[in-house]
Length: 298
Ligand code: INR
Image (cartoon, rainbow, N blue to C red; front, side):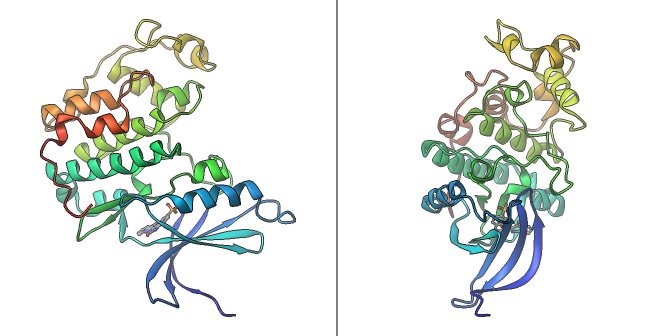
């Protein structure tokens, strides 16, 4: 076998497949190989997936993990990506003092938003942004988003396939209430990640869709037709809200104590319940919170 890539070790298991650290035998570079299998072995890789992957190969931004190569592999496909040392969830756990540094938080958030704004400008959604999908080069503090666009290529993983539970902590309220997905779902997730960098734990509890919604509404208020036109017509509104009207008992500023006022203002605009009023990634980049951000290395 003249393999182009030599497996070094397994580094992750996502909703779509297994990720390995590999060596590119030609260049000696370290890469990440994501091996994806399709359930219907007879039909091989669906052509829609191949088309989608071809689009992802065109994404070229310093804050998006580059898809370097695509190799058909029997009933599946191997995606070859750039390799980075660590993901944000491990980074927060391993270096809590660094992760909590206000300048680092600002630089990471700026880089996440740059990558998200770039993809949104290319009409590509992420749909599953979370700390595990954000990769960091520890020395340079460069951050790159992984898994972009894969949700559209492969469908949103339901978790049953790998036996893993879906992460609800970063799901936007409109998703939980049965609305259509659009770019604001990614901004919501970035807001949750921003808060998590400040408090070093997820902002919203994740037991069930109901408890996540209750958690959101106790912090941000219960949405009404006045604050979110159309909310009562969403397909899962009745089941999820009408029967459990929670009180607004918490305050976002208390929750992220220590965050500078401009940061709290930006966070509250990212965590706007109504997706139509939520700040966009490109507008978030113009916010005064980033007045003094250092973009060195990005
Ligand atoms: C690391 C991962 C380092 N690098 C986990 C990881 C622990 C430590 O998943 C990873 C990746 C990388 C990775 O360096 N490049 C990619 C993951 C993914 C794509 S994906 C590319 O799509 O999120 O699984």
